[in-house]
Image (cartoon, one colour):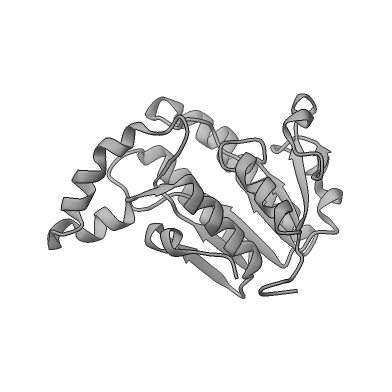
Length: 222
């Protein structure tokens, strides 16, 4: 069940979030079967054709059995609007949820785990980057086949102010001393992010694959 034309059975956490709410309709449109973990008050936010699993992302025992019939697990859970003041939330939500998701995926022998991380290293948002790096270590230690995506900032509705930085990025990418950092910490669009996640679903890998900002920009489904 790999490559173009294959139907995947996808379990997703964080499906009602900024990226997940755009990803699920696209996966359904491409004829994949999707199950989404949701809180009891959020079932209405999920498309009708997507099966909902009511549970707690911080406690995998509330949803692990629902993972059993899936071949792909996408983990998108994270604190909304990350900022320096949310360091404790990163550890109490992002890190815990990732560990629980990886635990569930390992128990159910998921063939492909997809984790939304963040570009690294980075000069700012150190607590956020540190937690995401710790989550990546847990992924590696699990020995799951995994694709790790590392965007920096995703442009889209309500996330438009960084467009003002595009001339700055353009200049930095043309200066040898700043080129690598500018590319690694570059901006991606919401459409590019969704396309990269769909491409990850439709192109499962063996081992660990890192998809950084340049890779996200050019990713496309099979």
